[in-house]
Length: 201
Image (tube, rainbow, N blue to C red):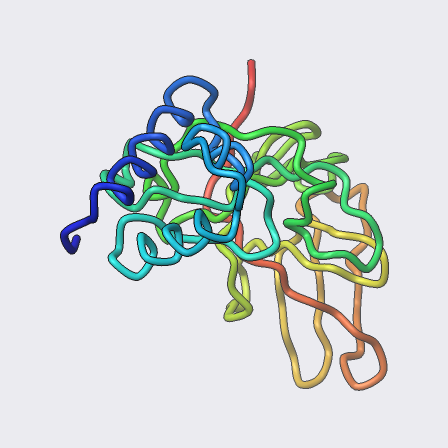
């Protein structure tokens, strides 16, 4: 990591402190208040500099979209995405229920968010109703991988199979039917690949 200015080091300390106390990074407005400045513009400039220097990663479109890159195995938190509204980005602020203090680097490849699973269609893959799946944001998926896909207005977790222009979203439970999508006529968006499962007991 490149050397930081005193102000950048101060902001980095505030981010660490927020993660330690609340398990979530601060908003730009919270950082501005803690620094005693009225304008959030200057704070954004410092955050962009910290990102360029490799201290943090900024996630666009997320209110608390700051991720510490240092000691990524142990530090940081991941947003928990609940029910997703039709047509809006999966990481939109209104979908985020909370943040889980969990280093993204604990998953391979690293996780970008946690998605709360609804239903039992992936039961035989060990993914149950209410579980959190760790999701790596990518559109590059292979047959047999478990993906998060958006079909029409629904976000679903299924096995991915592709043959020609046809995609098959396969459940891991015989009580559920596969979803077949003709990509020449229907739209389907891959939101990411499942790289881990967390169960609260």
